[in-house]
Image (cartoon, rainbow, N blue to C red; front, side, top):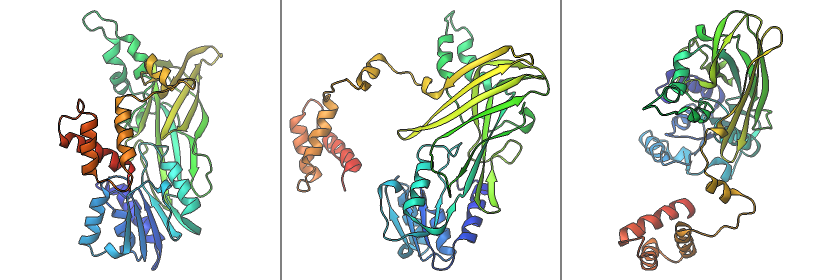
Length: 373
């Protein structure tokens, strides 16, 4: 991420314009703390660097090496689970994936705008636009289809195509502008200053103006960090660390001039990530349907009958052994026992699972890491 000079340079320039002497800055998903350090260099009085992963230790070390420890407060947690003692003049986050609609990126930005940002404060990024086009990408499409469409030892592997063709991927980084079959269309605009919904939905429609072969959709985004400063991972521009998204069709479609392609594309935030759906219809100039596909990455995940049974609303669950072990540990995290004491009790209670003290201590430590303060 840091080595992507286009992305890093744009963020640093945006911070240079946004941060004023005495500013309070919140850095969400701080990682190794580059934006936090830069904010201090640009005059910030106080920076709250929020990062749930252990990489925050690198940020602490970099702050110490640069004499900035007293100006940066490091918080190892999700930003949505914490409160801050003051509001920020600038909130910066760079937690996009190949798409801005990625894991908890958008929910965390909207939460930070409501709870952390002072009225009139600056969000970085301010706005992101997602674009889409139909692409002619036979080699890329082959990586999805070929392993399952070609016989192996006279075995029919094609039923697996239903799974893999519903699995969009960050594989389109090498798609060039000359592989776009249709004119790019704007699918979604995320203006974080006013956005309320974390979901994305829209219908794309193209009329084909020349014969070609379509293999699916390519999606990319333009990021406006602040006015006049940003970057894009569009085909034809310098390749960024993000790559581009490829949403494959189950099969190649021969397109003719006058054909109409309609795609209903949806991204719904569910749990801790997005579920994508892309429903495609290709009609000839006269209206006859040439191809029709209903796809979702929810179909890509193989789920057993037993797993579905345990997810039913009328299922009456009982703890399995691993659940009983964690329950045993949690019950003893009472603010009085040490992990050493808990590990000894754990080994004594579950001798078949923990052959020695150290394996019991490891398990107790893992539960402590997840739940304790």
